[in-house]
Every structure is written in C-alpha cells, then in structure tokens.
Image 1 (cartoon, rainbow, N blue to C red):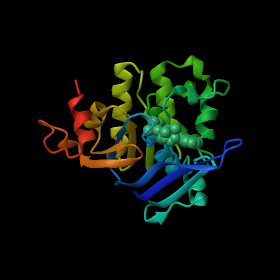
Image 2 (cartoon, rainbow, N blue to C red; image 1 turned 90 degrees about the vertical axis):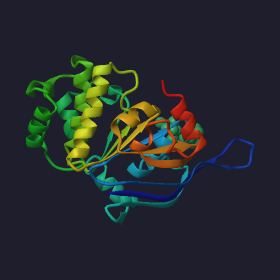
Image 3 (cartoon, helix red, strand yellow; image 1 turned 90 degrees about the horizontal axis):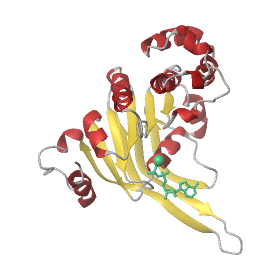
Length: 250
Ligand code: ADP
Ligand code: MG
C-alpha cells in the first residue's frame, strides 16, 4: 500500500546576518506498509517520526527539501494526489482531542474532515460503528467524554474511506482503558484491510499491537523487524539502539 524509498528531508534555515544553512533531519529512509498490517514507527523524540507522517500526508512546511520516493498503491504520491487523497483514502489520527475545534459541532467537524461530497449516510453508520449515538453530532467537543472524543477522531479519519491510516502518538497520557480501546480500533482497521502507520515512542505498545516495527534513530530506520522478533531475550534484534530499547522495557 505504501512504500517509502530513500527518503531524505532537509530544512533550509535563514538566520539574519548568517549564511543560509541546510539541516538534514531524515536520511535515506525506507519503510513499507502492506494492507492489513500495522507498522509501528518507534524512536525517541526528535528522531523524525512525525516528519515521515507529514511527508506522506503532504503537509511539510515550505522550507523542507525532500528527495526520494513515496509510492502509494504503485503511484508516486505527488502533491496533487496527496491533496486529493488526504482526508479521504489517506487519513490522520492526531495525538490529542485538542485537534477538535471547540466551537464547531461534532457532526459538522466529522463532515468537514472529508475532502469531497456529502457523507451524511456514512456518518450514521460510522457513528454506530464507534458507539456514538446520533445526538453526538449536535454536541460540541466539551460535551463529550475523553473516550467519546477519541472515537470522534476515528470517525473523522475513516468517514472518507480511509485505506492508509497514520496515527501519530495516539495514546500518550490517556486512561489505560482508552489506550486499549484506541489500539483495538487501529487493529480493527488493519483487519478490515487498511494499512496502519502507528507512530509511538513506546516500544511496549508497538510490540503489543503492531505486525512489524521500524526503529528510528536520528532520522533513519536502523532496524525493521516483525514484532515477533521482539521476544525471548531479544536475541533476534540486531542494532544496538534496538537492543537498548528492548533492555529498557520494564
Ligand atoms: P519526532 O520523532 O519527535 O516526531 P519530528 O519528526 O517532529 O520528530 O522532528 C525531527 C527533527 O526535525 C527534529 O529535530 C526537529 O527539530 C526537526 N524539525 C521538524 N520540523 C522542522 C522545521 N520546520 N524546521 C527545522 N527543523 C525541523
Ligand atoms: Mg512527533
């Protein structure tokens, strides 16, 4: 479904009185996600996880210089295609329910997350799927419980017919039950044939829910392995950083 090949991202920085400089933040990165599969992207803060997500979504800032290939269903993801697919086939589950607009009713927000067309009928069935009753649509975000608000984020992400879902740190700071529910929802989407990119700094979460794990270190993947390799004494793991993550598990 998604193939990222030899991706590099740099930022051009201008500072008053200084020469322009280029800061490379992602180098020669490769990842692949098949349909029906969760790939966890694991790495410390600042290792480039969100930038990968933004590159796939086509929402990098203007001063980013990108090279390499991002292929979706065999097609190069051009800015035009990204614009068309974003919010429809390619969706984001954000980190926080703060991404909901506090001044807009939930139903209108879910509709607005779709790129094209009226999705009133889809909204009904999707609300049902995420156990949101019909009245949720006429509520404002502050009237929702934390769990409901997270389910609204899922409804917004899938209403356009998502095939590739990117969840960027979707669980930090949540109540354990809501974490479990969120991860279950991601698993369900994969089981229904979506390709899921789960960005997390928590190797434990990755091991629990992902099929494959890509370990990021300083802007590139140092190891990509099936989650099953993260078992036993970790003897199947190759890179020192991956081993360090493994050894840091409680
Ligand atoms: P994370 O793995 O925590 O999600 P990010 O992908 O957000 O990391 O960021 C990776 C690196 O890129 C960080 O060092 C960050 O400072 C840098 N970076 C992100 N956005 C910009 C930008 N617009 N200009 C310059 N550097 C940036
Ligand atoms: Mg991030």
